[in-house]
Image 1: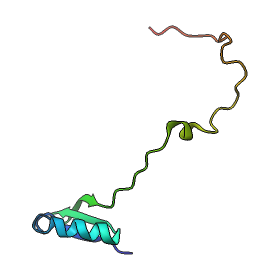
Image 2: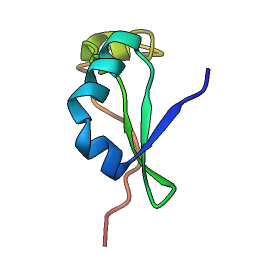
Image 3: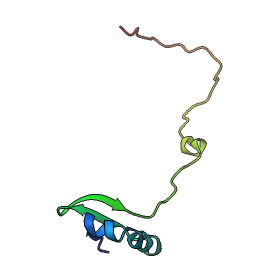
Image 4: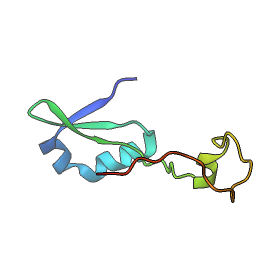
Amino acid sequence: MSIRTVSKSQFKAKALEYFRQVETSGESIIVTNHGQPVLEVRVYRDTRQNPLETLRGSVLRYVDPTAPVDAEWEAAE
């Protein structure tokens, strides 16, 4: 799959047309400035997760959460 590139001036003239193309095809468009890529226009995908789902499986040991912590602490200077 090749990624389509357009210059800033082309994009400015036909921005809505490019947006519709990205929405329908799902393929990204790279916008260039003097031949150098500066922007990528792509379909939005919601990647938000429930914070509890992100942490699921990360607790290694859960013995007594209300017990005092017995650890050496260094004072910040």
